[in-house]
Amino acid sequence: MTDPLPIVLAGCGPVGRAYADLVTERGRQHGLDLRVVAVRGRDRQRESGEWEPLTDLPALLERTGARVFAQAVPSDGGERAAREALQALRAGAHVVTATKSHLLTHWSELAAAADAAGRSVRISGATGAAMPAGDLARSVLRGFDVPEVSGCVNGTATFVLDRLADGAALEEAVADAQRAGIAEADPGNDLSGADAATKFRLISALLWGWDPATTRVEAESIATPLPAVPAGHRLRQVARAVRDEPGSVRVVLSPEPEASPLGALRGPEKAVRYDCGDAGEITVSGGRSSPRGAALAMIKDTLGAVLEATTGFR
Image (cartoon, one colour):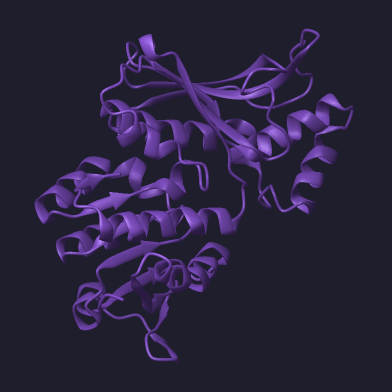
C-alpha cells in the first residue's frame, strides 16, 4: 500500500455520498490509500468529525495535503465551482468533477491552469456518468480521424420516448421516470435537449478542442404530438456534432432503426457513436443514470489522476 492520498470533496448530495462511500475501497483494489479528508457543503465543511463554517479552500488543501479536489455539486451553483476548481489546480491538486456548469463557462481558463500546474481536470462524471464516452473522445480515439459524433446521452429522454411510444401521455411518462429514480424533480433540461447539448459541448471540446463557451446549440424539445416514426424504428433524442461545422451542436428527435446502437437502447441506457472514417463506427453504450454511476465515474477519474502522468482535460 502506498502513502495516503488525501482528497477534498465538494458536495454531500447523493453523488458525493456515494463517492465518499466507495473511493477508499476501490482505491485499495489498486494498491492506493485514497482518503476523503474533508467534505465541503454549501456553507459548512467537515474535516474532523464536526460540521463547521467553510474555510479558505487553498488553506484547506495545504493543511490536508490533498492531491485531488473532487466536485459533486449541482450545476446551478454560480461561480463557486469555477473559482474552487481554479484554486485547487493552482494549489497543485488534480480536479475530478461531475459538475458541468463551470466546464461550459471556464473551459479555456481551467485548461490553462491545469497545464501551468502540471495537473489534470477529469470530467467523465459530466459527460456520461458510468459510460466512458469522454475517455473515448480524449484518449482512446487519439490518432483516429473522427469527422462526426452522435448519440443518446440523456437516460430520461430515452425512457420517456419509449413510454410515449407505448401509448402513455407525456405527464405520465415523466412521472414514471421520476418514480423510477431516472428523472429529476424538474425534467426540463432533459426534455428540452439542453442536458444532451451540454454533454456534447463537452465531448466536442475533448475531441476537437472547441470552446464550450462559444459552441452554438440548436435543440428540439420532446413534446406532443411527436414526429411520425416508420415501422421498425424507435424515436430517439439524438445529439450530434460535426467536425466540419465547428462550434455547433444539434439535438433532434430522430427515428432510429431498432437494430441500430441508438434504436436498441432501452430504459435509461445511453450510447455515443463515433464515426471514425476508415476505421468505421465505434459505439460505446450502457451506463446507468444514477448517483452511484456518476460516483464510479469520479472514482475512475480519481484513479487516473493519481496513476497517470497526464495534464489538462481528460
